[in-house]
Image (cartoon, rainbow, N blue to C red; front, side, top):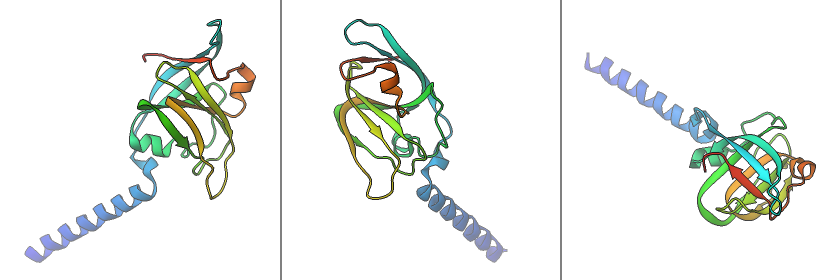
Length: 159
């Protein structure tokens, strides 16, 4: 009886280790869902609305690491909003991405500080740098199509 109990315990331990190994190689499996927020881009001078996207909120380490890399494509009215604790210099990469993006950095007040047009690529990864508390990723060309530029503001529903 003890041997059988030890065997079952060993099997369960092996299964747990396999689960940890799979999660370590594919962190997207740890993500169960995202909160969402409406993000409106407004002209920094006139306050005129330029565009709105529905964004998945990446507000934790795993969600921020995975980002949109576990996504096949991104419809025009959608994006991902990365929320950090404070405004700081940051760098984003296009790790395992299937499509190009605009990466929009904004400070704690939502003022856009930098916009990059980013392409999926292989290694070494390009670092897209900017200063922000918020980073909005949207389909590439979104900023140009809607006239969003540094100095404009992102107004985040609930922020």
